[in-house]
Image (tube, rainbow, N blue to C red; front, top):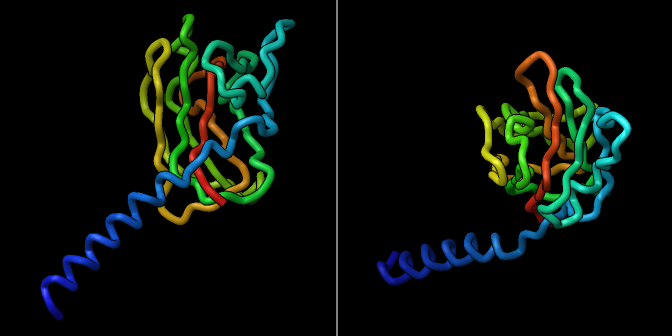
Length: 160
């Protein structure tokens, strides 16, 4: 095998891999969101977390292990999941997250975990194993007695 052929093959593979990332889109945008509970009498709906704006937020009630689940509507190949904290306050309401994905609600598997706290306006990111396919994405606080969950935005980078 010639050196130029090997070099060409390596370059082709690198270009194909790199170009694959450009095909990714936010597959969670405007999708159905379910929260584990509601925050008191004030309305901070789950869909605030998938509306593309970092200026509002979803908000759960005060409970043990609050979660937010996104129904993507169909299966997608999932690459990365980003969770953005509120920019006004309350970074302590976004910490120690399990990020789970699955083709069915009752068959979710761990895609990644974020340990610790974020900062106001901060970003958490989890990269799923290659070839991860899912319809549902769930983030859940897994540490502490009782918590609020109030993400500003959840972005799921994937493709059909």
